Image (cartoon, rainbow, N blue to C red; front, side, top):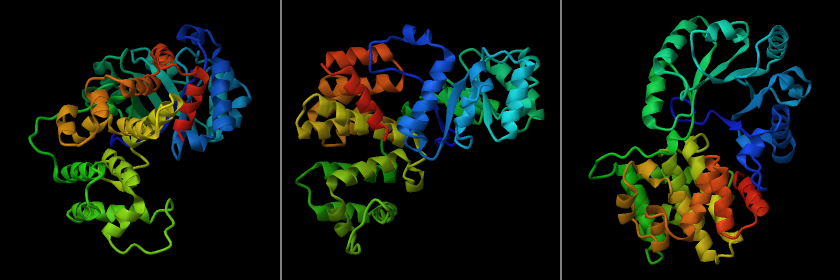
Length: 397
């Protein structure tokens, strides 16, 4: 992500979640094989557009991959080639990177640990590097600040802090000069002590409650929208998007609510909340992407588990709601007190209990690369590993 929290790119990594291979087995795989598998899958099996949308993609590369011909099969405008930290910077490699750079390929240095020897070791290749990825677990903040200042003579360089897991770390490395950030800090809630919500967020919660209550009057829902003109305008903009093709023009907010339906309207409201109320940011928000992934995956897992349609809907809703504390900056318990939702959903989100909680645990283990936890949860639910893996892939669509 960039410093504004907008999505910049994805990193494509190798995982085999459809078998019983563990992390140790995967670590023994040849780097060239792993990179080639990722590249072939990205280009042929999934498609770059499906994987990363309109953004870019980082892919790891060892010496053999960079010197070989396969690298030229990658669309240079979509990929950043990450030179692994154990690649020796020798003359043949520098010349090859310079050649590829002249053709428009973009390079990053991966997992860098800043030390006094950094410039000496990488000086020959720095003119062709666009992004330096800093491993903040192995680099002291004082050295990071010092090195970024010393590299001011290379204004083309961008610095990316990776393994950022908290908002405090994000702020610290942003102040040090990093402009890109990698990690799951964006999904962690920043809980604030406040007795009331911001007006726009309060309206979102009010609308959510009305939509969840099947007995609520459509006119009551329309009236809540009319009290929030900004939401009304964005709803009309959403309905006029390419996704919908209504034969008749929209006559009123109540007409718009009737056309879209409660289920789609509820989903849209939450996606808008994850984008901080900015509809144009919905495609760039990592929270939107993560909430959408969780919702789709939990629905598919519920289907695989043989749940009835009502429970599948609850599973998808659990995934969508699982980041609500991050959006509203309030404890989940306080938020759910304001919402009329099913007890099973509340139990999953607050106590981590029940089948819905197991589905959510599975999704989180996929996000964080906790392969053993993922496999244990799949088996505990009685699911097929291969079919679960297929569901994960489809949930990124």
